[in-house]
Length: 569
Ligand SMILES: [Zn+2]
Image (cartoon, rainbow, N blue to C red; front, side):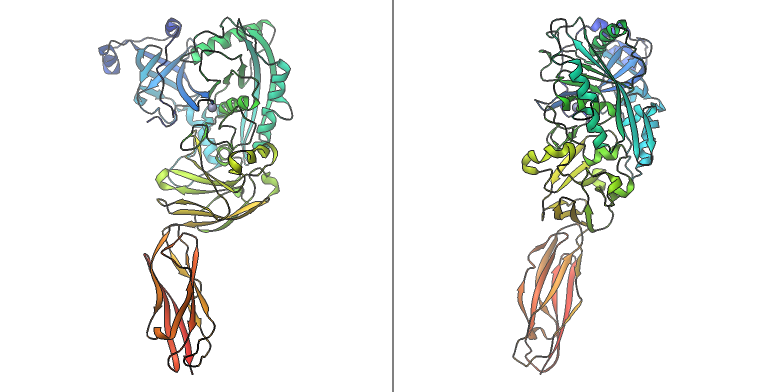
């Protein structure tokens, strides 16, 4: 299963196969894989060069594609790879790869073992992992494998400092002009407020900055009714090359940029696809077909930083609390795992929880420099090979729009995300409110929101199997006249584990069980993780002298007892 590409690939018509094939290094062999290719009457092919991972966005139809390419180092042409299974984990933008496969239409059919990846992809990943060492066997490396190798990223003790040098290039089709001005686009990307620049500066706590220029528009030979640029990158490269050539002719120096953002008019032939961006890359490349949406531009430029989508388990773009979720909406900040991806939450502000207890979390929007509280908790879930992240979002800065979404789902309390690390999607799982819990019965994790206010949210965390404990092991009653009943006292039982606990029975046991009476109780059939129940008992001696018994709670984990003593007179 291809875990990144959520939507099955459509069988797309290809265009300009001649152009696609023009630069490929065709190598026919008579054995091994190539023998198989020949047996299928498909030409065997081999291509070496830079790996490219392209995210393709259709927000209106909630569908996304991820496409894999190798840019031939000899010709510069990008060749589409179609993996028969999951692509190799380290097939990332910027890695140097050699792919061997069977050319079929506009793509090379390959399996993971047909692609040789040189060690280049690991350099940046190692840097990220160093910033956020994680326990367990999972790897938590950054999606910035390729771009980390550029001079625009510096690893510091407070996370990655990223200085993107970006050129924004406006493009006209031969029959359609881009519906945005150069000034407007420049402002949308680079201005000090209400811009991509301002958003990433805020959400990275000052770690990300953009510098550069906005040029164009330049008119290319394609029209807005041309076939959709399947398999995307070769055609988009052609369009970019035409725009670049005109920019160069106009005296613009295109060298030295770590990111190139092409803004184009809408096209009528690509369904709802509005953005095509490399995940990472130096230079990262983004193609945006709806320039009037600043959040769309920010989303595509987020892919260039290395991020994947902010999803829910059922929806590709379903996490509205992150700019990498749905677009065409409004600017808003990044979720907790995306900030962890870049190391922007230093260890004091990202608490890895391995024991139950009560924790208070400051709003994620707060600057780590001005709060001593953690801003995210994470708990490892072995069966998911992932961490759960718990963070608290408030309507601050660009997150001021969050209360408008889903009846305050994101700001009424703690957000729960799951993320496996690397360049995987982040998944929003639940928004807690006071008194509600996130429960993972497989991994015995229960996190209950106790309370929240503008300055923070408090949760109680319970881990491990159901565990019954008593608040006090014994209750002593004052002397009572035989036959008379005194004031009740309360025995408290708690489940401090991470699982719900079945209660079989509650009652008075022991030698003198007739001398004590249950007045009231809150213990029922189940005691949820992280909760307590009580049994109120009265001493009503039936004989004189010392009397003793127990309040007993029989549970799936054994029987808990509170001893009772009193004297009848
Ligand atoms: Zn996207």
